[in-house]
Structure formats: C-alpha cells, structure tokens
Image (tube, rainbow, N blue to C red):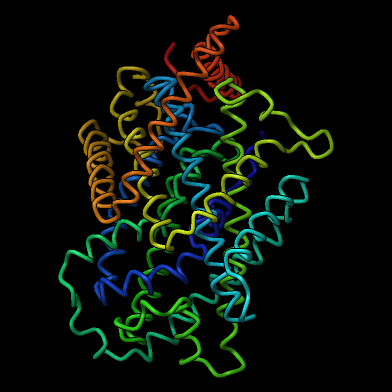
Length: 457
C-alpha cells in the first residue's frame, strides 16, 4: 500500500470516524441518571482515552503497517492473545454498528414519524453492507462532505445552545450522587471509541511515527471539545428528569433554540453522521475478518476477494450478518454502548501488556522512534491503560448484569472456537500458530524492504 495520507487526512479520518451519531444520542440518555454531572462522566472517560491515545502514538512508530494492532499484539505476546484482541474488536464493531443503526432510526423518526425503528435499523445496516459487498463504496469526497456537514452542525448547535442555557438546570450538579456519574463514564467512553483504528492503517500514512501522534493529539482535543459542548447544551436546556423519555435530545433542544426553518438541520446531520459511521465500521473492520482468514484462524473462504472490485466480500457479508443480529438483540442504547466498551477494554489491556513486553522482544526499536517515551513513562502509561481498562470493565459489568453474562459467553465462545480451529487444522497437517507467526514476520519483512526497520532479529 502507498503512503498517501497526511496530517490533516489523519485528523479528518479520526474526527469523522469517532464523532458519529453517538454524540447526538448518548449524552441525553446518560444525563437521565447522572444529571448535569454527565459532563464529568465524559471528562472521566477522556482520561482513559488519553492513555490509549498515548500508547497508540507509541505503537505507531513501532509497527507502522496496516493491521498494526494484530501484528504488534501477536509479536509481543502470542497468536492466541493477538486473536483475542481482534476477536474483541470485531465483536465491538458489530455492536457498534447496531448502536449507530438504532441511533439512525431514532432520528429518522423525527423527520418521518411512524416507522418501525428496528426495521429501519436493520435496513440501514443491510444497505451499507450491500454497498461494501458489491464494492460501490461512497467516494472519499462524499464521505468528507458528510463529515463536514455534521461537525459544522455540532459547532453551530453548541455555540447557539450554550449562549441560551439555563444555569438553574445545572443545580444540583449530581442529583443522584456520584455513583451514576461514575457508571455513566463507561458507556460515555463509547463516544470516544475509534481513535486506535488509525494505527491499523499506518501503512497508508506518510511519516507515521510523526503524523499519527500529532494527528491523535489534534483529533482528541477537537472531539473532547465537541462532546463537552453538546453535553453542556443538553443538560442546560432540558431538565435532566425529562431526558429519560426523550429519544432524540439534540433534536429536541434544536427545536427550542433554532427557528422552525432550521430545526431539521440537526436530524439531517445525525443521519449523515450515522451513515458515515456505519459505512466506516463495516469497511474497516471487515478487514480484520479478512486478516484472520489469511492466517487460517477463520475459514479461508473469508479472505476471498471479489474479482470485479477486489473487496473481501465474504468478510463484509459476515460482519453485516453479525451486525444485524446485534440490532435484533433489542438492547437499550446504553446497553449496546456498555457492551462495546467492555470488549474494547479487553483489546486495550492486551495492547498495554504488549507494550510492557516491548523491551524484551524488540529492544532496538525503542531508540529509533520519533515519538519516544522513557522507560518510566512507557511503563506508567501501559500500566495505567491496563488498570483503567480493567476498572472500566468491572464498573461496566456491575452496572449491567446482563453484560456480565454476555461478556463471559463472548470469551468462552472465542476461546473454544480458537482451540477447535487449531485442532481441526492440526488434523489436516497445518500448524495454525506457525501460519500466524509466518504472516507476522512476512509483514515486518515487507516493511523493512520499505526502509522502515521494525524488529530485532
């Protein structure tokens, strides 16, 4: 792959990917229990995001290749843990698509009342699954236009809304105590999910060891500003007690602060945000299915490319089906967000463990990085990422017992599948783990050929 993406391309990709429909949906539902203190929930979630961004910036210099999460984690730990990380990401993507699809349905109801929301959510997933399946992916210009549309809408909404907030609605700031504020931080993290996806397209970014860290910093600040402003506008415009019964809080607030001719701008912006996010999730994470198929962890048919468009059509189809199943689970929006966060926390724990093992596996790479961390700060941020991620898992599972059962089944099913697949291939004379490590070494070797040394062999 050619390195064609510059700094502002990274920023546009990250902001467009991270700032999706969740910003228009989730703050209102969380504020229904946390009250105005939901602003603190987003601040707490941003602390963990900062840790993950720093580790992501560090990793981008170690393995600046496409699929870096899998390459890095597997190289530093083992094929099983590398699989478990991608397993978590794929599951999180399926539930993330479901979350955004339900958000799309909620806001379409504002414009076109009376529709079956579940049916709408399923249809939008199938629509974008079909686009990706047949290779008719929306052009980059169209995607960029939609991103500009909804980001501009967020800024206009926030500027106009904050100027009109009722400060009396912000008191008491934590009406139900700090517990709900802390619990809300877990699903709030979902709104930030997606920053680490940038390291998985490192092979297409110019000077990734410099561009990715700087892009992560700029994008993080922009996203944090957007979420804080939207949350403040919502709780400063509608009594928090009423938010539990409002499906589209941002649209409701827009109806209060904008003239009639402009109030439909926000729902349209949400639909654009949801569309780009669903399309992006199916496009990006179907490639993880493809990679696991290439190393034989998933059946080889899933790495088959379309002869006409070069798309991993079977991988796209599988992710589309799992996303539709997630939609039909019928969970509440916050439950989807909690489940996504819990599985993503697992992948971050593995990333932190991999970073701790780096000096032992690839010691010389530490001295050749543009974004460097001393031994103390590398351990500090890696351990911090592990601890905070573990804490978020505990809080998330305690706040949602249903998630505990699903998370346990998720780990059990993934582990069982891995062992069965390994034994199946062994019976055919194929060592699956050797196949995985061969792919990892081949990827590193190809990067070395591009004058980007990645390992100490």
